[in-house]
Length: 167
Image (cartoon, rainbow, N blue to C red; front, side, top):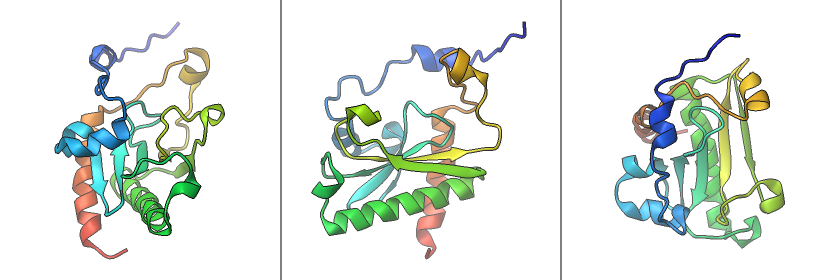
């Protein structure tokens, strides 16, 4: 049997699940005033992009409206447009910074669909050819080749560059 050594993962596994004390993280994280600690990589007028703390793949982003709503229908037309622009910007950002081979983009609406936080948000997941292996299937474990902080630094720097250029 081959052994997988990922010693750096222990730091991630044993780290406190920040922000454990937060009752409404998608509302409270933008108010922290520290986008690096919050893992926010880009802000728009009505929504923002944040790195998922429990990602499926490196660079897994969430596009979130600032106003707390549960359903798509609760967003105003301006909020819908801004959220879609955040999703498009997030895809461009990941393409520029990480060069994935594809993307999964979508919403989990309701508990039955996998929605774990009652604040509407979209997932933007970069995918690479061959990125799915035996670990999630057999070991109920995902392996991430890069720390969240390193991914945040790459994406935050690229976001500033992309935001300065017209789409």
